[in-house]
Length: 178
Image (cartoon, rainbow, N blue to C red; front, side, top):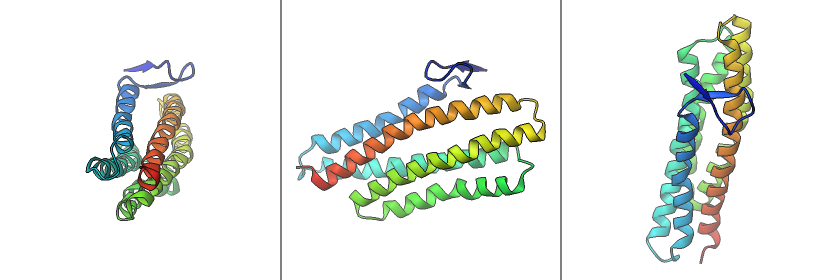
């Protein structure tokens, strides 16, 4: 059901397609940031690429929040405070991203980069808490949840770094690109 990945420390597991799909999800970020830099400032490609970069980032951060809803809906926690925080946070990235999309384009991209960083920080808070809650509730697969949380955070850190660099490149293209 799960396969060890060479990207993670020994014993860390994620479902088999997770890493490949996550890495494939970086391609639009890289392609759109590159397209923004490769096109002349007066060409139609740059504003289109920057708009798509912002829209794609908003979709991705919405998905990252939705993962927390999925977690809670799949297996409710016995910790009401943690469950409430997870549900509230699960909706927050989409709302924050919407605010970033209505900002001037360059600053919206910068805001989206900050939202991606905030989403990683919240994952760092919530996923280990889910693993602890699994142990406290006596889930038979609690140890797997601990490994899953650790592996997910390693992957999220790497993905976050690439996404933030692409969004920063888009911001710089909008601000300084010739």
